[in-house]
Image 1 (tube, helix red, strand yellow):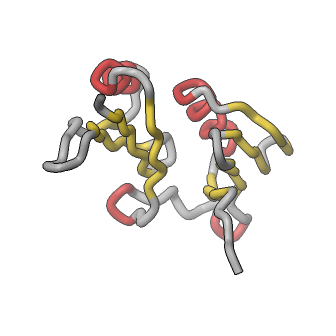
Image 2: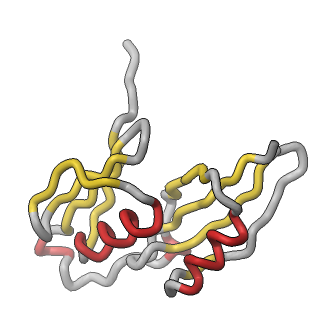
Length: 125
């Protein structure tokens, strides 16, 4: 048997807010939507789905980055430092860009409006 990962679902308090964030900053496009309940975004080879949290979780605040064990990684073809500054100017929490020995890329983590962790990855030539 083989299995292919084709969709990641994020449970969100504000589906519209996250939809706008990922479409505006990452150029993702909506392929399916039920207003304020469900959105599917095309991300290239897979989909990012946003699903409104159930009523029983509506009063629970979104998680903090320290408690998240998921990280969405976006490989970008732009200058990571400039893109990081654009995200900061738009109010996004971003950490410093970093490199790792033996890895031909620059990385930078941030948090979407609900605290979900994402990472920018710029591959170096």
